[in-house]
Image: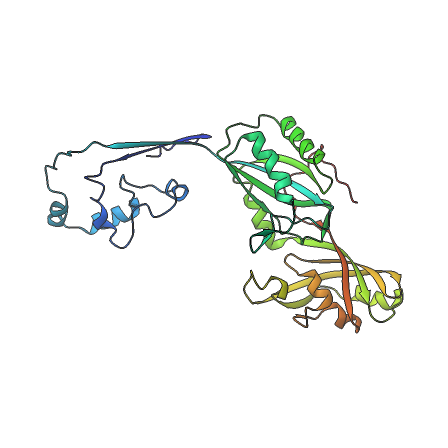
Length: 341
């Protein structure tokens, strides 16, 4: 039984009787009662046996009086067994958002395992979430972010927006000053990342993280090697390419976890800064979801057009940094600090 109140503390009361628990099975012959996880069931209006109310209403509206009496004789029989009462108590989730910078080229965003073996000792997710989980005495957490970077990629500028959902927290965050101290604690425990603009957000506000995925752009800086010697004048041709559409097959390096598909993406602008005859720094702005490494080296021709085709020579990428994620969420706080290193 879920009462229609909004509260950070929830009490779910379930009353069952073994003799009557199957009374509604005929209403939902194709489905099993309570087949959904509790988190889903709590969001739906149900009768006492766990059959969704919409199914009950539909069946009863189509049922004749004789059929109803056959299934439910009147007066009903008296139960001979005791009811069992289950009480579950939970605190509503708490949502904490912010932006993170990543300064390491050996740090994964989330815990990284291959064949059961952990490949990196730490992750961005754990650096951020574990102190928050401990502080709020939460049972668990869910981490999400506006995209992700590879292990060997830095994230600079204002950082990447992220969201932490704390499940069943037993402690509340009272004021922004407390959250700021929590941010300072996270930043004091590592030099591999830093967190900025840490704050509480509402569940409604969390939708912005995913809605922004569609429209946002990203800016990158990459160190590029070219097989043929190039001058700054040669490289300036890249500035003439504006809003070019590229077609990217799923990169070979991620085929083990993503479906094979061809994705259409846009390179909005590019600018090259000469370093020496065989190296330059490439700054580019792209549509979200663009595979930058594959745009550079073509992934054995799986991305077209690619940087090698534009420069008419073999190229490769040596380093990549995320310069900015152009999603204005969550709001910028005066206490936030950003460092590019």
